[in-house]
Amino acid sequence: MSRPYNFAPGPSAIPDSVLERAAGEMLDWGGTGTSVLEMSHRGKHFLQIHEKALADFKSLLGLDADHEVLFMQGGASAQNAIIPMNILGPSAQCDYVNTGHWSTKSIAEARNYGDVHVAASSADDGFSRIPEASSWSVRSMSSYLHICGNETIHGVEYFEWPSMSTLGAPDVPLVVDVSSHVLSRPMDFSNIDLAYGGAQKNIGPSGLTFVILKRSLIADRRPSAMAHCPSVFDYRKVLANDSLLNTPCTFAIYMAGLMFEWIANEGGVAAMGERNRKKAQTLYAALDASSFYSTRVRADCRSQMNIPFFLPDERLYEVFLKEATEAGLLNLKGHKALGGLRASLYNAMPLSGVEALVAFLKRFEREHG
Image (tube, rainbow, N blue to C red; front, side):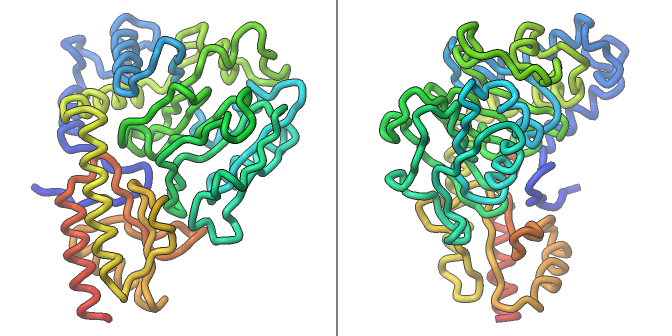
């Protein structure tokens, strides 16, 4: 039986083959007679799953020896507090670039811990672009500069990381929220000091949080975590305990491991990048060719993962969503913060799903335009 196409922004679609494998191993993983859901997180069988998932993730990311990966809990939203608690230095200064809903959330949380400076913002333009680097004002004494690599709600994505030297702050660490586009295309992490995200977009089910960390960021010469930082959120302690300081999200880590294997078997991150570029180009081309649908993001920073678009009449949204669901196209409703419609094209979405959506868009326009 064919399943409908799921355009959900997260938790998002997971490939059928991954779900089928997980179902087949549900009662008995590897001949152990137990489910992964029942395994001790310190037992040899789960440690095998955990170590392989970490190694496969690092390999797909192409990380060098200077970077480590932590598996944590709490989602990207928790990291908005955990990051300043861990790396906010004596100056208590941190800088943020505001490109949308999730940047705004990050900024609000960080203000509970330090002196936050908004180095640049596109709020005045409705978050339709990334501010030109020449307009950024980064403080040289800041503990870090934070950006959101891909805004899932407003549909804005960085395709090049900012150069801290060019910004006049070569010693300021760069922190990037990569929740919604990690593993969607090759990325250079060499100049990123910390990247983080929730797993529920391209990696697997919700519950698992990943942190990609440059070791120098928590070296002995650096300030320790704030005194009130919980032990389970202290990067140094989590790293020292191989992400097993407390009971981790065992099943989510197992599922992430299956996803890492699936990506590798599909050709790796480079192949994902080509697929995702083609999917996004296919949908944007249909939207741009229409006078019925509209988009608001500047072309050079349109997200390949999350594509918001709008109808000419508010009364049509309910009809659109009803007919789309009947056509097997699910979860196209836009976020309440922005409205409209949104198609999320994560790794698990095949090109055939985008082509089915484009065919539906054309039919809906003919019938309601």
